[in-house]
Image (tube, rainbow, N blue to C red):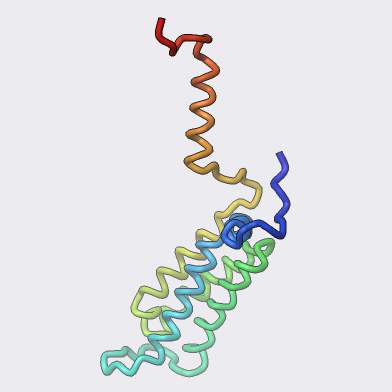
Length: 153
């Protein structure tokens, strides 16, 4: 069964769900969030910020490239393998250059998001909703019952 073509009267929520279903959405969002979190911790005016490693250009370059990889995974899912491998290396590099990877939160989000994008398979069948499964089981149960089995005598 071919998926229905999006029509002009299709709600925006349905169009977004269809778009999201054809790409590693959660992995790209986690990777983008991890890079943004590391950039925020680099600019934080906290007296507790650790200054470990190179605090020059690399401290801002690696999380910026993480954000770029996350957005590329979202908008160009065909190249997700290259972007996710690059993002893992960038995430691990922030351990040294960017306050222990944004105090571990950005580092972990980057690693988990890029791993999810790497493991995403584009040719999977779309998930059936709970309503679709319920209707299928109800119609199968009705097909198994003989005619008049549920009626009083």
